[in-house]
Image (cartoon, rainbow, N blue to C red; front, side):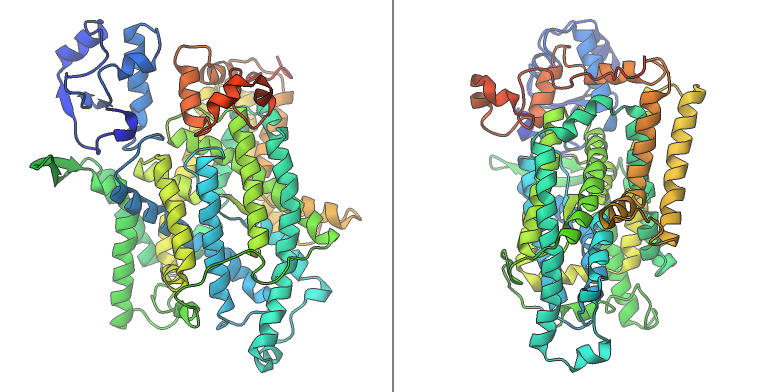
Length: 622
């Protein structure tokens, strides 16, 4: 059985302790199997694949070492690994789970910006923008998971582009007239008003994205990987989760009872009921068989969201929730008014994008902060998926693909760029499903629902407190991944404790001060003002920058800094390591062409035959 044809979770046979010991003593020469080709469970560890799979996948290492490494690899107990292909119906359900986790976060950005675009609450253009953003996010998600970094990362709108976008719209020439005056305008004039403004923002994003494309595909971002260490990644990834506490608190505070119930339900399903296997009938070659399925651990978010959504609807209809309560299911129904059932987004649908020099340089700050955040997301996602960290060519390709996504967003007129969506990385940690195919299906679902405007907009009516409860869990999982990276370093070192504590705490303090003092940066250059404002308001950048500088300048031994273990994890000289990296991050096609022509191996965004992690241990400090 190949990996792509993996058994559904729950179908396994067991081997007792004596069999386990005999395997470790090398009594089996054909790998770990039971003669049937099915997966075998040793204690709590599952092995799946053909009889020769384990031996062949680990090269010529001694069998005991190979088995113990396999046990360590399965420590995360993933139901579906990166290369696994679940059944199509499972992919649809898991893809919908990703879509529901991301939809409210993605539409919050345009909903915040719509008033600045001079759009009324009842303007159907709001639904058009939301549908376009969902469609573009699905398109870029497919590109990223298939040709980019090739990890199961959902792409969506970013708050990093919001600050320069609002700065553009606050310029005197783009100020909105009073609401009373807007209401007296004809529908055509109001439409022209907001389309001129969104074209200015989208044009700036499209031009600025060219810089990100060049930085990614030309390898400038990948060069920084030589100096990115555990003490750089840990605070960066941790702050990806912690910095979003405001968004989680804002949604959850709409009705804390509903939010707490959502959190409790996810916790019970994913932790207390995670080992419950539901019996499911299955059919094979005309015969009926019995199998089990860990439904509660794979779909905790989907089950919790659907259940709480239904509960909120019942409480709304019965009048238990008072008018104005954010847990009511009818509070966002206005967005469905005037939205057609079918509308296909296309480039230039609002007119040709425009851009000014000031707008473009402002958007560059959003591009920089988004790229830095995405590198941290790549490491977090790889950790959740139990695969090696992305090599240089994969990171370069991922950042370049995000630049292509921003370019597409600008041409389609989304009014926002695209970047890695941290919420959905947390979903992988909760559900233990790291399959790339699932996120590819999620991208297809986004594109489909972006075309069916009425259906896509309907999911926006999910009560905010339900989403807030989900955010509390998923953002916490992302922060936990950052903290887990510290196992590489010595936590008994005062040097390391200082760097960790200061980088995380100051990254929480400085953005708060920047938010409380808008316009405090005055360098005399509008470009520098906007760039420093965005960067210093981004917690992930502040934490990563402090960790990067201190760890590469403060003296410390390689073992103390965690570089010894870090290098061992990235080392591709051990048998099987290179094959594992290639399997995860190589392009889906064209590899034979790259291997035949050495000139193609010089491109920093294409896989080289060797040297996936050059200069893993930085040489600035010895």
